[in-house]
Amino acid sequence: MRPTHRHEQMVTNGKQTRAAAAGGTAELVRTMVYALLIALAIRTVAYEPFSVPTESMLPTLEVGDYFFVSKYSYGYSRYSLPFGIPLFSGRILERTPQRGDIAVFKLPTDNKTDYVKRLIGLPGDRIQVVGGILHINDQAVTREQVPSEEYINRHGESILYRETMPGGASYLTLDRGTTFQDNTDVHVVEPGHYFMMGDNRDNSVDSRFVRDVGQVQAQNLVGRAEIIFFSGNGNARWFEVWKWPWGIRYGRIFDSLRW
Image 1 (cartoon, rainbow, N blue to C red):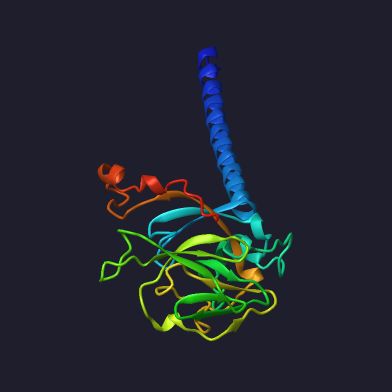
Image 2: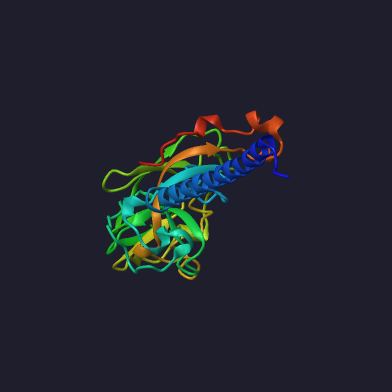
């Protein structure tokens, strides 16, 4: 006995429904793949987000700050690519950084760990700290104390200073008193390298520590820090939704990191 027309229609409709569902799933997968590829391309050639885990860049960057780094500012190296895939050596479309830039780079001692510091010395520069004062090419960098109620020592004196480099870069630093980091040897920056320091001068492991960081090769530069896009004060964990409104430093969002 032949199936009825109604049965044939139900079978046909069932096949169409399954085909439509399969087509919808395939379209969703394609959309997700496209979105992933676009995000990967943006992260590779344009901007990459980073967060701040330590106080080495206080007062400019605080723990809990999230900021964007522009990849194109210095050109591209293998470390511009995801996982540092070694597709090429050196840098392409290279642009010279400027003194005073805040830069993210791969730690030279392992080529894996991301560090963020301020670029102090260019190739050929002579860098030295004398009595807590930064010297570039044997000239003391201008430094002025800035009154602060937040950053003070045990005597109630401000430890906040504004440095102004040759070339105009101006930014804030912290000086927490006399430490072994206040006096260094002269560091002559090698060709193709850069000298980095944290703004929290007495609490930063940077190029002054030759064995731990040392001078940074140009190819280790990831990019230039541009802007803070989010800042959390640590008072709200990710699942404590009810605390979110009080866990955000609203005043730091969209702060520029360019001097």
